[in-house]
Image 1: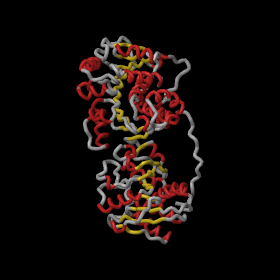
Image 2: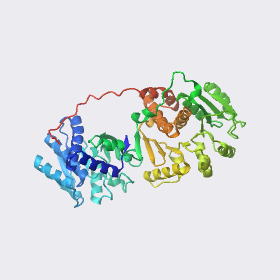
Image 3: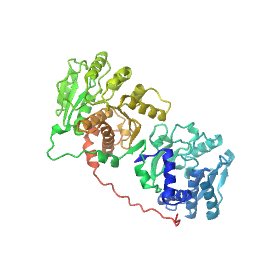
Image 4: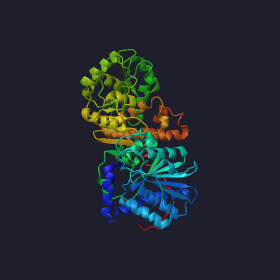
Length: 518
């Protein structure tokens, strides 16, 4: 699913109105009815007090449409206009007149704190104050209104985006933002739903289809894309009947040190479980018995040093190398990695201490083969690209980093993002149970194993992250969040593959319809 920019959304609205021969007011009516339908299906006529707060722009117009249909269908609705400026849009004014004519109920005007209505915890708030067009800090009294809504603890539904959040930069003041329980986003999700600093303003989100021109949606290229099952299915490479292990590559996993052999074990198991034909682990001598005993399917090469990696030498011809897990950053290991990078031409997947070494000695970044995959967590990323002001600045720096070194960057988190040049791929799988030791080692093995099978680096990262998260999602169905460990994710990788080809169950909800023909 594409994530459109603010400018592209405006373009899509205009093109839709033109190609479908409708007015912007009729498109607003269509959008508002979709929000109403969503509410009507769930409320089923319940007389819970609903407070609809409308700005004076197009988002406010959407809110007025929703309020009008709720009122005409017998709901207990109170409508308010947040009178924060004297610049009202045409479609807002049309719907302002329409709600008065249709329902005989005039919206209350709010202009200061004295106007704030009483809201109870069991009420419902609909936020339609500001939309994606907001480009300036909100007024102080509007901040107070938003805090008033938050203190009520009432269920809050935001239309398109929570008011006060920008789509292309960080918020100015968290007090000037509506904290929504749920956001209904028109046609596509917004990037802000997936960034740590802005995702907190909406606990959940959902996309509602408002009939934007299909050709526009299909053909328009976006900088960001949401990755789900439909997006990864075309990446999948089916296997032929007469295939053999040599067709699926040889993954070499380099890492480990005394007391940290588990990371290499997890990484190696993941690489083989995701489908690599052969896996060899390169470890210090102290890891030989551990690897041979715990993972008999892997081959093992040992460093001459007993406790750490000191000189990376091997006589095999790997397809791809995953390195850095559990490696440590001792001076001998740093030198060994530097010497290895100077002569290596094999594709790389680098994690953990491999990243830490690169951060301390950034000149080594120039030695990485093109499209190497780096998989940092937030602190490792900061050491690589430098500190950032906010999440938007972080993505800007990440894009520049991938262009400079021609690599694929995986930013691990709740919605792991793969960055390559100007493109961002936002993953949708995974859960809080993955916040446990070793899950990053498993991801490194998964991506390495996919590259081993012939997947290009970018595809391997996007597909691997999806499968890694999906395996964890399937595992918690039996285990719960707290009991999930990294090994469980490896064990569920096969089920994640199988799930790719399962048909989704069809919902049995029948949408309510309105009499409005627009």
